[in-house]
Length: 260
Length: 270
Image 1: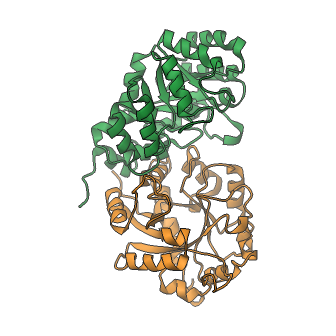
Image 2: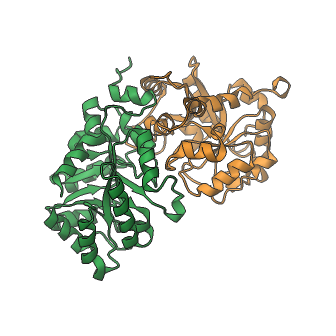
Image 3: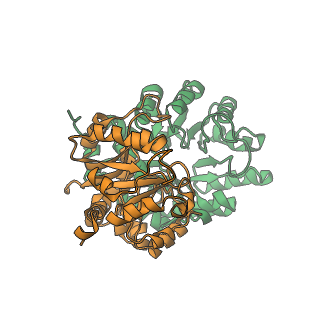
């Protein structure tokens, strides 16, 4: 047997979400840690249900409390547009993101106006992400359409690594074209149901483009792990997809003067 | 405290393939289908994918039969099964919108070795319990054939649980696999309510994505009625293998779900 893959799960959630399935499926840090230990997941970027469903700032406060003293768990923050402090103060200060040790940001694909979010009050948020090269996940899990999303956003924000998250498999031709076209665009394994996905996509766009995520607890961790662990590719490529690709992106996060 | 890992989970976490486990995929696809962009879709390609994953056999219906010309697709399926009789089990695919051709196609496919039958009410815009499908179910009863049912879940639609319930009531002696039928606990409860007493109804786990769903289904329906199915070709075999390998059932139960149940089932049908 080979060495265990150093999985870095970019898509897990804790907190009381609106409609857990099955009823009562409420996950906290203890449940997350137990599942990570059972399946050998090394690290995770964790979002909070309240941040995604109601208030980013409130959710992130809860997240910070939950993740205190958990070195293998880092916060994944949800972003809303910089519209008005009378609604909620958006994240436009890169220092705040660094201080909180945020591993990634996430925007809802529909709320991000199909790629036009930077032209609809998200630009100050992206400026902050760009300043520290924070990865931004484009969340298609519940809403949004990959087929009509304007990925030219990647050209406008070349310092921001963008990750398509929740792409099931169609339209594959558009995603492949975009992954080839934009060097700063990546694809998450969350809900990736393409037949023979990893070997095919490694061939089409290169293994460095694939980022591991599970969408736990909405889905079991085993699903996305299977996509990587059982991929008919070189073990070194599995390792990239399982975690090294995302760790490479994480390694670039920091103030401009500290970047290589 | 961490639960000890069984041998299947260990092999999975080590990157597979699952040596020593007889894996039979009860529900998969091969062949092209325009919008699915299926890679490795011919017989050689499918078998190479099975080899890479450690899957012994895939039970397959053909994309051309599903999305286009059903008879041409069945012919292509027959060819594939003849090339790899130990690796590919074929479901003949039936389009009730061609009622005059049903009987002859059923006979042809049976004679040419397609032992399973598949119905897809959504593709053909025909409810599962429409009389247009009756020749298929009647043949399944008379010849002890296996029917793979495209199952739309819950109630309603053309392939909803209520439609299939009526089919099973009217043709109780056929053997049925409800494809991607247990997406969550409510679906398991519905399956128990409608099919709990019917031990000739089996359930494909291709969309049992939620945590604990397989375990709950095992408890309520019994492990013996659960089958690994991937919807492969149109979905990922590896993803669905991970679903079963990483669930928290014991090794013996995983073995039954991954292959033993389907082997037993195949042995009982013509």
